Image 1 (tube, rainbow, N blue to C red):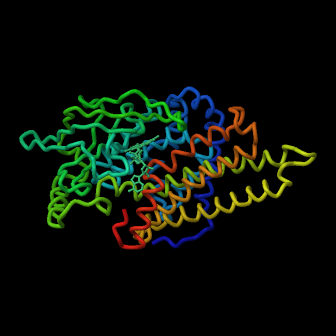
Image 2: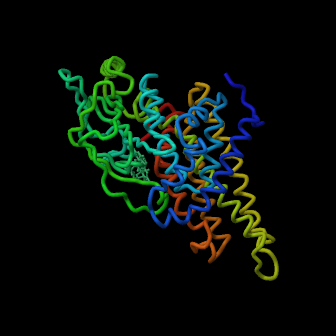
Length: 408
Ligand SMILES: Cc1cc2nc3c(=O)[nH]c(=O)nc-3n(C[C@H](O)[C@H](O)[C@H](O)COP(=O)(O)OP(=O)(O)OC[C@H]3O[C@@H](n4cnc5c(N)ncnc54)[C@H](O)[C@@H]3O)c2cc1C
């Protein structure tokens, strides 16, 4: 077990400087353009692949840090640069996290490199869980996976909704129901390899924010994948289903389920992204408040402005500690006994929204215009109270963990 220290190691400090440099020099200058174009910023992804920031080796290094902090440090800095481009770069890692949490070492070795491609021809990956009628309630999933024993093939049929990189991904990781009677305990995750017939992405959805990141529905029409595309393998799935059947009625939530296991791991990371947006907005507002004058003095000399910035900085420091705590716990196999992963995502998401709103207010009319980045940050931030579990769902997870009751 790695002892917790708030003094970053030399590697962690170097990592922070490296990602910050990329965020400041490459991501920020490109942010407004890709937000307006509403297209996947392939040149930026390629640039990140070239310096080794986008790719399975760098992600393995981030995951490998025994303190759990490196992944969060990198996410905070990248999303400080821009959240839309950040998500275009990090959307792939959600699919990779899905493979990590459910796959065998052989499956990791086969599929993770294909999620990223290489620097000449970078690729992206998608993690497909949500459906038109199953968002917060993952147990209502209708996409079915049926096994064709004679051919050792799985057949996937259904529709996925709101999928980051849906349809443009090289590798789609699809969560489907094998035994609907078991609710979310009857679900499993499958790899859909590149070019598999029957999988089709719909048109990119036009969104409030994160506009550089591709979001689309995905249709699965009799998609057939080889037996080895079931993450974790059939033996493990059969044993898990047998245990669930013995355990009785269908439930939702809990460990060992394809989608939930991934979300538990990824929540502090999503929190770190939200923190990056909050910090960017705070820094911009602090700077502006020091130079903008009204009534003959810099506006920061008014307590109402200075105190708001003081509160924001306090929240930023507190939220970072929550994220680092949850991340350290997850990396060191400490159970989230009070929903600490959800706590970190909840507070960070809410902070991103309040900090960007406050930054727009501090800038006044300038904050409302596209001449300044806080307008974009304000639009981008809102997704952090919605995806990866809404704020209400995070409260549900925390409330259930602390009470031991089935709060609804
Ligand atoms: C930009 C974007 C990217 C996304 N990327 C992905 C992706 O890559 N993969 C993927 O699988 N999904 C993705 N999603 C989907 C996202 O995870 C869902 O939108 C989210 O889980 C909420 O589901 P929903 O939209 O169906 O809302 P609903 O579940 O319909 O919820 C609507 C409202 O009801 C509230 N609510 C629901 N149940 C309860 C309850 N029990 N108690 C209190 N309040 C409740 C919710 O909090 C919310 O406010 C993405 C979404 C967006 C917008």
